[in-house]
Every structure is written in structure tokens, then in C-alpha cells.
Image (cartoon, rainbow, N blue to C red; front, top):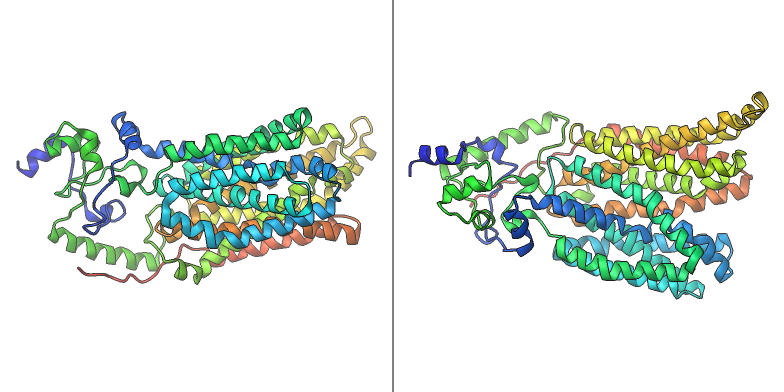
Length: 530
């Protein structure tokens, strides 16, 4: 049939190849072959883009990193220490060594494995490893066993399972990546700060910490592993789809508005079969136009940035990414956030006690912080699709800097309030504490959301597993040393004042670096002619 007839039947239009550059990349003959997947086929027949399934599954995966996260490990630290007869400083040292070793080993193991074998296979292996780590914790009786347990929890939980879940969302979403990351992060924050710690605290009081970790080990092995194998999938292009639910063009370069229109174009009633087995082909005349417009767009990108960060970025090699200063600006900022943030939460209880605040105030603070973190994730996720990621990181760093600077004054505010209003002791101190907590959680939410999207936005999706893991290892390394440094300063000076004042300098310096060198990087294209 004539093209006009096809367009009338499909309700489609021939789009300029400037818009196709991000949505329909040219592929070799070998890569054009798509794979059939019964799970994707089922949801596609139901009219559901599989990226939403991936989003739900990856959010569950991020929640299941809880056994390896500091807020949840902190719930069990005291019972473990008392049961094994170790001092607090000795357990903190073991935790530091285990976390540092985990950070150093992540780039050489998990990152390249995700890129080589895909997210589906890796989530199964990692979930089983995290379950095994929980059983190692439950059986620990010596310092060596506890060190191994901490290493496995941090490696498989905070590092590997988190990275494979973040990579999974990044692969299936591009234009709405920030919104999806924000929604997932909100659910994770709620569970990480409230749900899972409450579950662990209740079980530790009733059945003990060893049985509690056995429960979590069984959940990781018998639920998360098969759940991940069932729903995690690698890049959508492997299954004949595109990110964000876009419909691939037909053989004639026609953009169909739906899978049903595509079936009409092909003259077939099997909608999902044609949608999953599409072969991308572009006419030679339009191919030349596409190359010319790509070159023109790239020249404009080298001199001008629209600030949205929504365009699909060409894929960078790992080597050239690690030699790019923009990568290290964001990676060091991630280290700064983890270092100061982990130290803040790790020593918060003692800081509040030194400020003279009651136990009731401390208990009331945590639900408030959970709500602040959830709202921060939602707002930052929505903003990530509208503004450049560096502005989110910049704002989050300045907010964290303000929060850390105000911590030493919480005690002064509480004392002044006690003297001024005897009927409401600690009133001013309470307000300042809640304000500082809100700043810290909001700033952390902005930085975590930006950290989940900035590497995919800047360096592409091809080697994202390795690139994301290297950056995450910097954060893991910062979380290892932060509490230890704060504790040493506290022992030497008798208070946390100097620690928090020095800590406020680090995010301020990183904010300047992000402002100066955080612009989305560009490189000269290397054209490959066939």
C-alpha cells in the first residue's frame, strides 16, 4: 500500500530524524535480532509497559538491601556487641574495615559483572549472597566471623543489590528517569527509616538477634532471589522495545502511536509478536540526513546546554569516564554525602543527649525525619526531569552544609530555652533539632536522587553497571570512615563541636566543585561508516 494509506490506517506520521536520534539508534544486523520473553509478552498483551514492572521490582530490591544498610545494622549493633562481649570502639573498627574492603572490591566484581551478564542473573546471585551473609551474622561467635559477616552484608546489601537495582531502573527509563527514581526512593526511605528497623527491633526483643537475621536470610534467598529472576530484565532494546515505553519505528521509518497501530502497519493481528520482533531499518537518504543532523546537534551541545539533561547520552567507555573530571566531581560529592551523613546518624543519639533533649523528643524525631526524607525524594525526583542534575547536587550539598553547621548550636538553644521558659524546657532546642533534621534528610534525598540519575544522564547506559558501581564505592568508602573520624575527634576534644564544624567544610567545597565542573560533559564524535 501507499505510504499515505499506511499513515491513515496507523494514525502515524513520519518524524524528523532529529527526534529519532535518541529513540531509534542504528543497530548492526546481529543486534537487530530480539529475544522472546514470556513475562514481557504477558504484560505487553495486557497493554502495560514492562518498565513499570521493572520499577516495582527494583524498588522491592532496593528495600531488600536493608540488612546491609547502616540504619538497620545500627538496630542490632548493641545486642550483638553485648552478646559477644566486644567494646563499642572495637565493633566500630570491625565495621570500618569491613565497609572499606567492600568499597574497594565492588568496582572489580559487581560492576563489570552487571554489564557482562545482565541484571537478571546478577540479582539472583546477589540475593542469595545477601541471604548467606545474614546466616553468617546469626552464627558469628568471634571477631573474625563478625568481620566477615559485616563485609558480606555491606558488599551484597549496600553495594551490590543497591547497584543492580539502580542500574535496572536506569536502563528502562530515560526521559522520566528522575520521577521514577524519586518515587522508588520515597518508598525505600519510608521502609528503611521506619518499617524494617521496627521489624528488626520487635524481633530482636522477642526471639533474639540471631533468629532475626535468620528470618531475613530466608526472605532474601527464598523470596528476593526468585522474585528478581522473575521480573528483572536487562536493556529493553534486547526485547525489541525502547526506554520510556516508546514504540520503535517500522521498517519504513514510520512512527506508530501504539502497538495496535504497528500491527495494522504490518497487516497482522498478533500485536505483541510484531512489537517484540521489530527490525529497525532506515532508508539510506534519510540516514544521511540523520548523520548530518546528529553532527549539527553535537556541535550545538559542545557550546550550549539546554539544562534539562533529558537527551539520551552517547555511551562512554569506562576508561574515558574515569578520566573525566565531571565524573570525579560527582563521585567525591557522593563520598562527602556518605561520610558526613553516616556520621550524623551514627552519633545523633549522643548529640541529642548532650543537647539535653528528652527521650520522648528523640523518639518523636525519627517519624518526622522519615516523612521529610520521603517528601524530599518525591520533590527531587520530579525536579530531576526538569533541571540539570548538578543543580540538585549543588542544592543538596549546601543544605547539608547548613545542617552540619547548626548541630553545635543545638545545645546552646536548648540551654537558652530552659532558662527563658521554664514551663516548656528545651522548646527552642526542639525546634532547632527538628529543623536540622529536616535539612539533613532533605539534602540527603536530593543528593541521592541526583546520584542515581546523573551517571546515566552524563555517560550513557552501555557501561552503566561499572560506572555506577565505581561511584557507589566512593559512597560506601565515605560511610566507613565518617563515624570513625567523628568518634576520634569526640574522644580527643570531649565533644562533637569540632567534628561537625570541620564536616560542614567538606560539602561546601564539593558544592563549589559541582558548580564549576559539574556541567554535563561532551566529547567529539567518532563517526563509524559502514
